Image 1 (cartoon, rainbow, N blue to C red):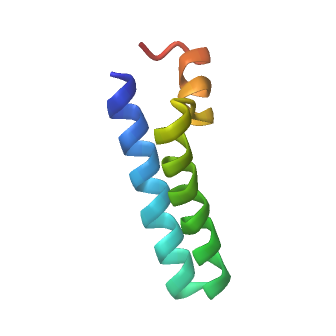
Image 2 (image 1 turned 90 degrees about the vertical axis):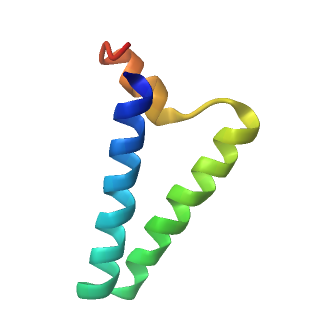
Image 3 (image 1 turned 90 degrees about the horizontal axis):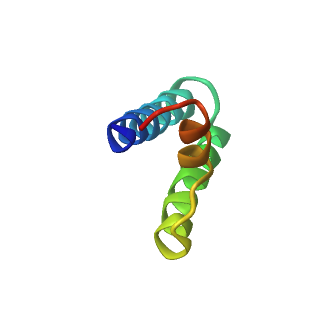
Length: 60
């Protein structure tokens, strides 16, 4: 269940950042870059802040 929430939230954030980049300001692309860097970092360290937050909220 945690994996489903994680993928849904991250996918929504990526899509939202693309929409904001196109319609609001190109600087929103940095949000997309941040998400990508965080995913790469979590692959190497096996730690992700979103996962920690979801666990504290009681997602199993």
